[in-house]
Length: 465
Image 1 (cartoon, rainbow, N blue to C red):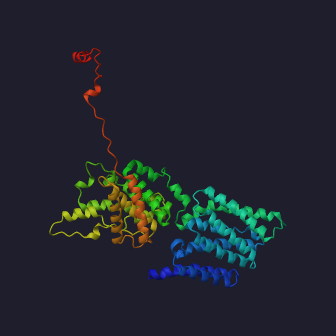
Image 2 (image 1 turned 30 degrees about the vertical axis):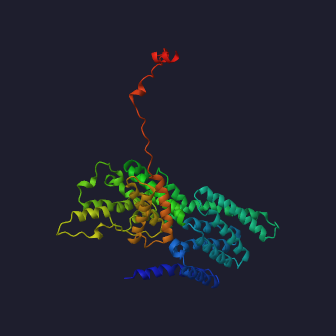
Image 3 (image 1 turned 120 degrees about the vertical axis):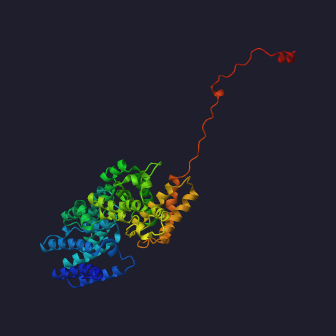
C-alpha cells in the first residue's frame, strides 16, 4: 500500500516532470526546462511556499500547458506571434488564486518558453512580460465582470503602445497594432466565458462568484430568513465581524464574509434546537439528556456540509461549515452531563467535542472566533464596553489555549488586531441604551387653570387704603 507521503511527493514531482518532458518533445532547448526546475525549487524553498499552499502545482501546470499549447499551435502553423493570447493566463491566475505572486511566476515562465518557441525572440518575451504584468495588476481584486472587460481594453492599448515602442515609433503595418489591441480585448472576453469552468476544475471561488453567493435571494439564505431567522441574523453579524477582521490582518475579506453567511446552514434541519431561534420561555433541550442534546448540536456541522453539496456550493465554502467549530468542546452540555453524573458513570470530554477539522486558513479561523464572540456577547446582561472587551479577550485566549488556532497562520499580533476590531463593532451593536423617563401624568395636568379673581380681596382693599 502506497504511503501518503509518497503520494504527496508524486504530486509535487509529476507536474515538473510533465513540463520537462513536453518541453523536450516540442524541441525546446534544455535550458528552458532547467529554468523551470530552478524556478520551482526557488519558490518551493521560499518562506511563503505559495505554490503549494495557494495554487497547487497541478493547477499551475494546467494553465501553463494551455498557453504553451496555444502558442506552439500558432507558431507551428506559421501565423503571426501577435495572435498569442499574452494576457489570458496571467488574468486567469490572478483571479483564480487571488494574488499577484502566482500570476507573476506564470507570466515569467510563459514569456521565456514562448520566446524560445519563436526562435528566442527577445521582443516577444518583452511584450509578453509587460502584457502579463499589466493584466495581473488590472484584474487584481476585480469584483465585476465588466471590470475584466475594461482590463482587456486597457491591456490592448498597452500592447499596442509597447509594440509601437519596439518598432521605434515607425508605423509600417498599421494592422498589427489593431491586432494586438483586439488581442487584449478578446482575452478579457474569453476569461469571462471560461472562468466558471476553471472555478469548477480548481474547486475554488473568485470574487465574482462570491458576490453572486452573497445575494440574499440565494435559496439557502432565503430558507434561513424564513425557517431560522435568529441564525440568519447571527450569520450576518458574524459576516460583518469576519470581514472587518480580515481586512485588519490582510486576509480575504469577501471570502470570510460569504463563508460566514453559510457557516450555520446545517441548523436548518432542526432550527428550534438552537438558542437564537428559541423562545425565551422554554427550550427544546429541557426534556433531553445532555448526550442527546450534544448530538443534535454537533450534527449541524455534518448536515451543513451535506446541504452545501446538495446546493453545489464551492468546496471553499464547505471549509467554513466544517471548520467553524474546529474540535472545540460543547461546554454547556458537557457541564450538564457532569452535573447529572452518577457514581458508576463516566463522561469523557472527547465525546463532547466537535469532529473538526481545525481551521487551516486565516479566513476560517477568523469566522470561528467571530462566531464564538458574537454568540457569547449576545448572552451578556447589560453589556458595556468593559464587559465586551473582557469577554472578547477571554474567548480568543481560550480558543488559542485549546489549540483551535494551531493549523492556521494567525500570529499573536493578528489576534490583537482581531480583538480590537471585534470590540469596536460589538460595542456599537450591543451597547447599553439610555432609559428615557416617562412623562409624569397627574390629575392637575388634566384640569383647566383657575381664573384669576378680578375683584380685590378685603386684605388688598385695606392695603390700598
